[in-house]
Every structure is written in structure tokens, then in C-alpha cells.
Length: 629
Image (cartoon, rainbow, N blue to C red; front, side, top):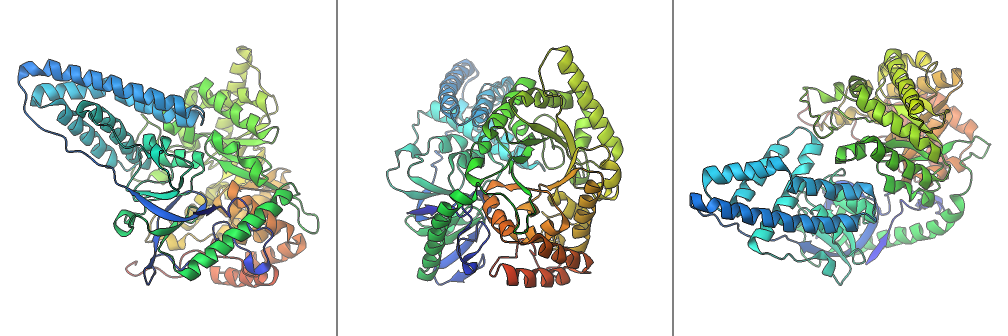
């Protein structure tokens, strides 16, 4: 078993021929290609890292649940059995919750949610109502009620709600096991190093994993935002989810390469692929030693242009690992993730989470984005059907429509400021009226803290994300009110090009190097600088090594990215001259097509950083896929 993560140490000491972006550990064939027995499976990058090892297939036995009719007089006895089974299941969940506390509040919240689900009065009412109308045994009734609820969740257009179907399955399985007297095999009993393959894994399964021996996890189902993925990342286990066919194509004992950064699994790699992968892992390990020195060096070009490299996080646990990568702070804390888990929305709970992050950063600045829910991210209990959610009730629109909820978060952030330097960032701003409304509520939150005698730093700044073309066009006006800009390229690209990046028929159009996107970025940076405020970027483009020199040349002050991308980005910065980057940026901004930009950039990097992978800047194809009109 060989394990490593080039993302953690991005080959900073490699020769020019070995330079690669995090995740490009091996020169793998393209996904979908079959070479002899070797096959490449493509899924979702759920947790970073690369591993070579043997597969262990975990096929969860789902025992047949008996179905039988009962007499009306037997319902009381069946309900008593149900109550006892729920009590036993709740005791198990209490134990899992206690175990999860060492991992953090978000992991503990998963099992809080499971406990609430098991003891939910509405769930119990549905069980009782169906029992007394169908007169069938309680095991079958629990199975049917849980199945109906899961199906309803799976039909939801919202990804968060669909993923909660797994939690329903976990809780109901636990109750049915108690009713049937079943004791499950525990993954804690593993004694050999394995890559664990499963159709799906429940959060309680992950918590019981023998983490000394499970070197990677691959699943056919799941996503990056599932509870299972949250736990796996917290454990530091490389993982690929959403593979669909892994359990059909993989046999126990097969050799696999798992790349958790690119979302790839290689089944039965040939000798050359294994050799290349092992070489890259060796380079990565050597790079780790060099990066131990590099991570404390300045993020500065060879001719003295200094920029800041920060990290994006979604849960507090991530903050505790950022020192490994040399992050100079947190440029984007996605605060909504904590709220979407459930049970974490009170002012005290939020203050505790933010304070924990600030303490972990030990004086380095943290920028907290206010809740960016709505659209494709929905908070429990606030679901709203919309025909076009990405252009709907989301971001700052959501917060301004719910001012008390918004001020609860603002007070929590303000009060956490006693633990370290913090900034507030408003998402999805389209014009100055929204910014003024948000700032007014922030001032109300300040005044409420003062009235209650709650301490907070008076100098907490509030800035905005630039992610809508309207904000770009009025950036000069917004810069008079905002303390800083942070460009969110993920949304800016799709809104500028009218191309939903999740739609396979048009996502080829969502190209970061499109001249319109580059000019939006440059216009935003210039507007910020003309008003004396900083311009940051917190979208995926900020962590793309192939884009670094362009962004440097445009004058970007701060790059915020997935922490694992920082080493490769710093390597490019320290190997570049700012004057050269400005020449490249000026030429690219004058280009009229993606093809022209690609030729310019490819030529520049070919001269300065030979071998650098440019696919992150120029993804997709140049024409519509077959069948697209």
C-alpha cells in the first residue's frame, strides 16, 4: 500500500519536466479509456490524496424484512417493541455522538440530526398511523415509512435534501436491526490495509472505520457535500464518490489507484502507470521536505511584487490543517455549510464555530462569507421551489428577506472578533442598494451587541463578492461603500457566459479564459484599486496554476483557494517576474477569442514553466457536443 498527496506538497522542488498542478500525480490515460485490463473510472473528488492499494468490497447485507398481518389487539405490543428499538438505537447514536465530539461540532451535528430523526414525533406519528390502518408487523411499517420518506427526498430538486435520504436509511436501518435482533459487521475490525469500495457508506459506518487500515474510500453513490464526505475529509482519507459502476467492475483484491483530487480510480493499472504513479509520489514526498521551508517564504515574485495566498474552507476542522500549506489566512469561510447540516443555527453555536476558526488561525485574518443559501443550497425547513434557482432567491437576497436570521449571524461574527481578526463578506451583490441594506443591518447588529454589553472589535470590515456582471459594471460605485472586493469566478463565469456549468450540453462554454471573463476580472480589480481597496479572488480560478501569471499581471492582490493548491500557486509566483506577467495579461486582454488567449498563455508558460498542465484554464472543447443545437 502506497499513500500520499501531491496536493499537500505540490512538487515545489521538482524539475521543470516534473512540474504539475496538485492532483496531476500520474500521467493517467483519459477517463473512460480501457487499455487491456486497465480501466479508468471517473467520479467526484470527495477528499484529496492519492493511494495505490488493494480493493476490499463492502457489500452491506440488507436482510429481508418480514411482512405479516397482525390483529388490531396486537398494535399496542408492536408499538412497545418500536419504542424499545428506538431507545436502543438512540443509545447507539449517543455513543457515536460522543465519539464524534473529538472531531468537531459539525461531525457531532450529524449524529445530533440522526438522534432527532430517530426521536422525531412526526416520524413516530406516521409509524403509529400506518400501523393502526394497515395492521402489519412493526418492522415492515418502519421499512415502508422510511422508504416513502427517502423517495420523497430523492425526488427533490435540491441536492442537500436528496443527500438526507442516506440519513433516513441509516436511522431506519438501525431501528430495524434492533427489531430483528441483528448485529452488524463492524468495519473497525479490519486488519489489513485496503481501499474500501462500497455502493454507499452511512455516516455511522465511516465513524466506525479502522482508520489505520482504510487508506482510501470509493463509492458508487454520494457527493462532495454528503455527511459521509464530510467525515471522510475530517479523517484525512482520500475518497472518490459518485462512480456509479465501481461495485460492478471491481473485484476484491484488485489493484487500484485512487486520486481523490481529480476524482479518478484506475482499475488494475499496468506496469507503466504504476511506475509513473510511484515516481510522482516519490517526487511529492521529496517536495514535502522542500515545501517545509518554502511554506514560510514570502509569496513574492522575483522582482518584488507581493501577494497574499489564503485558503477557502467550509467547516472549522479545515482551519486546523492550514498551517501545513503556508496559508496566510482564510479568504473564504463558507458559513452556510454549518447551517445546512442542521441544528447549528443559534447565535451561540455560530459564535463558537467562528471563534474556533479564529483561534486556530492564531492571528491570521479570516473572511467569513455570510450565508449563501438559496438556489441549489437549501437550509432545512426553508425549501422553496423555483423554476430557475440559480437566478432566484439566494445569496444576499435570501439574507435581506430574513433580517432577523441575518442579524443573528452578523452578531455571531462580530462577537467572535474578540478571538482574532475577522472580515465579513456579502455574496451575490448586484447593486449598491443591496450593499447599503446589508451594511445597515450590520450596523443594527453592532448596536444590539452594544446594548447587551457584548464585546466585539469595532474595526470589523465588510466587503463584497463580485460574481454578477451587474456588480462588475457598477464596481466603481460599489468600491465606494465596500471595504474590499473578492471575485467569485465560479458564478461570474456562468453568469457572464450564460452557461450553467452543471449542464453537460452547455458547460463547454463555461471557459475561464474567455475574453469577456478576463475583462470582467480586470475591470473589477481596477475599480477596487482606483478607490484604494484590495481585490481578491476566491473562486476556483485562484487556485489554478495556469491562471496565476495572468491574474498577477492584472494586479490581483490576494488569491484564496483550496488549501492543497497553495504550494503549486506559490511555486509559480516565486518563479515569475511581475513585469513579464503584466505583458502577458495586456496581450490576453486584447485578444478576441479563447483560442488567441490559449496560444498566448501556452507560449508564455512553455517558455517559463515547461510542462505545466493548462487544462484548468482551458477545459472542455471548442465546439458543442454532438446533438447540441
